[in-house]
Image (tube, rainbow, N blue to C red; front, side, top):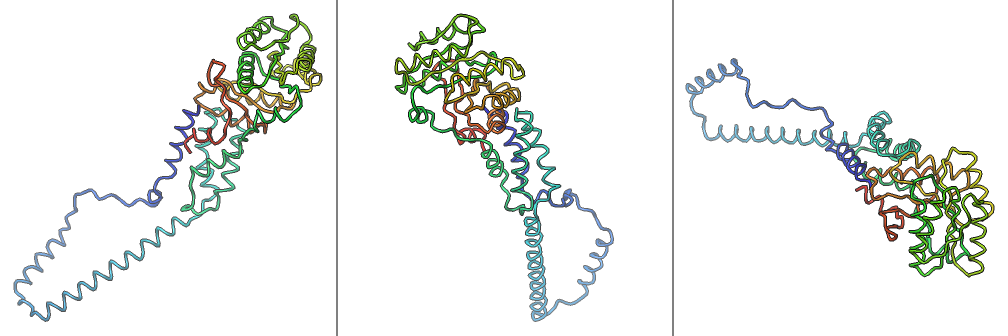
Length: 366
């Protein structure tokens, strides 16, 4: 994750944190070949001839001229050393102007957009950087640190998932939502495995009644994990399946109910109204959006639509292990204002990583 974005950001930071002396007016390079000044050459010849005629100065005169020459050279060196720091100090103290910032950020904006960072999120990073950098003396600017700080503000560390469940009444109901093909059913099985590993009892609700294959798939996961699956026939009311699963959990003193729902596009009014109905009937303690890291801005738009419809609690991003760009994690968290709870990092049940924003930012190399 963040492979491409990491290398691009490092390249941008390094480029713009080059030695400030390079931005000063460049002095012409010495070519190595010295121009021959004919007049000076002739003058030297004449002087040499005169020196041959003039008598050798006395020791006293030698001492006087030698001391005078040394004093002149010392004054010259002092004057040069006094001027240089002033010029350098003057440059380093220059504040960063808005015009120079816009020029600086333009390249960063392209890098972020190319790596699946949503435009709305790019604007948030720009606003944060603008506030912290404009007017600041150049010598005090640390681009890597400032960019890291801007990105940190976009992400939220999730609450302790297990503690939330243990501190609530039983059964704790979690509803999963997302589009077709995002790996929702497999991710539910991973969460079930994680909960069972932490000594919590679980049952699964097969509320995706639009696809017979979805019910069968959830049953297979249930058998593999030795977890009960509550189901109805193909085409049954999904809200009724969720309701029955909660009743089963109460009767059998099961800690958690995980409700699988049918994948639906965020622009389908009919299906979005249906998931609103499931939410009203089952009253879940947690509503999780499951999106694919590699889909970029599509996942961001989907998460925003589901959040507007049912009010998400958190997010899980699948296929994080094959996501080279990484911008989806930044965008989804920022646009929804909800924490990322887990990252899917493989195909096995154990491949579920608790999200940690510090760890994620560290992967960016900032």
